[in-house]
Length: 80
Image 1 (cartoon, rainbow, N blue to C red):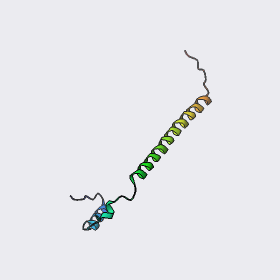
Image 2: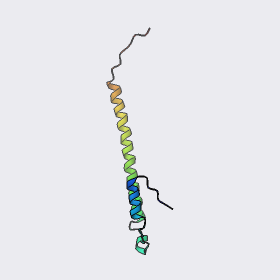
Image 3: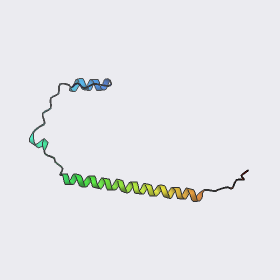
């Protein structure tokens, strides 16, 4: 499978690394250094933070709508 370069820099990088050989399939590279529980805890924490941010953003939007609505000056116009 060939790698297609899209511009000049990509072409140079493909030429530079086309013949590189990498052999890092030893036993230590296949073992995860982070436990799955720690990763799940980090994901849950990130999701909760994002959920809180969305809730605060929604609440702030509603407060701003309320402020704009209360400060609006409605002028009666004559209808023909």
